Image (cartoon, each protein chain N blue to C red):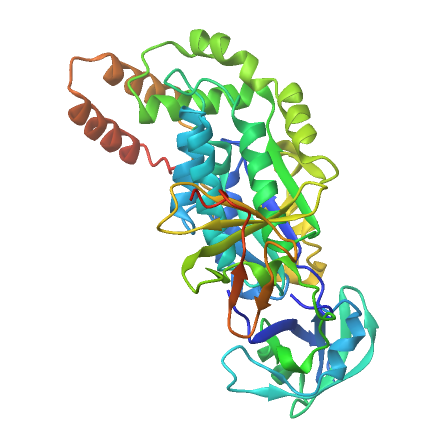
Length: 170
Length: 269
């Protein structure tokens, strides 16, 4: 699944009686949630600017733009907060997260589609891509090495594979 | 998933059968809007082909059947977002078919099933905070509940005592769960005896809420699922047993049992 918007947190209801919200962060550094600019609802219909007041159990107390009463804060309960992935720092070139690879289309060097990435396994000897597709009788396991997978283009949602002979049964 | 966002946490509650799993699932789904900041729930019917594949493997534990489960799970997991609140999978079918005196007589397939679930989740999310939760029940009560379930859904014609004697080894879950733990490696398996949540307002959902670290005020605001009446009286048990032993064909028998159970005011457990 390609994700252009990333869920970085959620409102968990009012905190206190002065219009603060309880904020849950899914960021690696939890307080970083307030540093990515406006946060959006999943459909992009509303945006919020946050200011963290202080840490509390299971999250933060925060002030939210346009929210000044307990009732307004409570009405936000359950709202998940998203940012454009382009607003977030990413890994250096040639490093990928497993989840970014899942679902990418797999093409051979001649441009023929071989299948798509169903899973990424690691049993201790390097990452292995599991490729499935309508033309494959069984999942194909492909070493995730520069030689076997010379190109990964997350933007285009595809990888180019140059598999060792016989891997795809030909 | 990108560097600034932590890998999604995952909690898998896979059973066992007849330990309050349906009540727990319904409680969580009834309150899912309230719980949305803390968990996204996937239930038994959310991923039906996954449930079906797990049950089939328990009946016919072949490599092909396991591959089909893995593929079904991978396909569903690939559609989940990689960031967000904890992904909480509550699906007793991941334990396979309920044991009885039909083709599936024990939980022999369970460690392999749960091992596959673990592998697929790790393959999707990399190295998530992944935990498993299993609910259990005292063996005598569990066997009585298992007997009733089998009476309802099959033509079981044995007395409860005979049935309980035959299935007694299945009720001893210690070795089974040790085997499950062995397949989980460093992934924790939380054990939740049903007796430990019986007096809690939210019943068997409580250990799951605790594992999800849901704050007390949110738990207090949750609406309990109505208590299901799943324990039949002795007359109803005897009457259903007699129907199973009757000359009625299977369809007639099932209809008669359904009517009897409805008249007795007993819920599906």
